[in-house]
Length: 326
Image 1 (cartoon, rainbow, N blue to C red):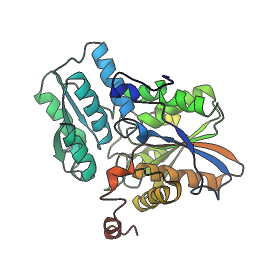
Image 2 (image 1 turned 180 degrees about the vertical axis):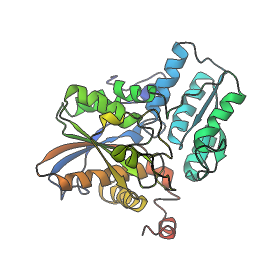
Image 3 (image 1 turned 135 degrees about the horizontal axis):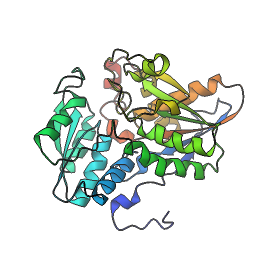
């Protein structure tokens, strides 16, 4: 770690985000809860880590060079990380994003000069115009395009095994009982879980999946549930993907949109932590876990992105009322 935090370029500032001990939102629980504040990465999310890792690795082994096209499907945060790396490495960048993605994220991507392809988030996963297929169509139409494929590429979790996991272990001085985190691509929770469990096999890992995603049913029963629409961005999926290693997860909870969003707003009002909906989902999961424990515990959670990307949704009273969350 560069103690003085002086770098040659912005991507070098990715990582070594702080852990913050939560107070008012958990003070009724007999647990110490520490949140990894990932929105303090340069582009505002945990996904800066995988973007830097994947692009650096691809350049180092000759899969990618200046002028090449990078294509990915993203809920917005990986797209921002890839935008950062594309600017720095003189790459072209096309991102497939759902139309329902927050306006703030879309505006940020346009500000970075990214070519956006907006898709209908309600299409079947098998539809070539769907979120999970359109990127592959674009890659097929552009020979030589680089497709990081964050949803199926285990380099995603490797990035967190190499960085986020060791940071948390060092910051907590090895005293951790539980890791609670949302599951989206699975890279963050599984990469961190793999590292932490190698240090202490007694650490238990709890994943938080949105109601409507297929992961919860698959984890608990081995069957592929029917996907349904939901509003939390960056968590869950409509099909089983290749990146998550479900063997590293001890249990999984299912959170509703409203539960996650109300917890998100509580973080802002009670902790002065302006985070996104996936962070609220993680806080909800922490509270659910802690209420079931019969002993004190030290819990680490991860807050992936910033609330500034959800001013028009989660932090908008009219939007919340329209969806029945207030």
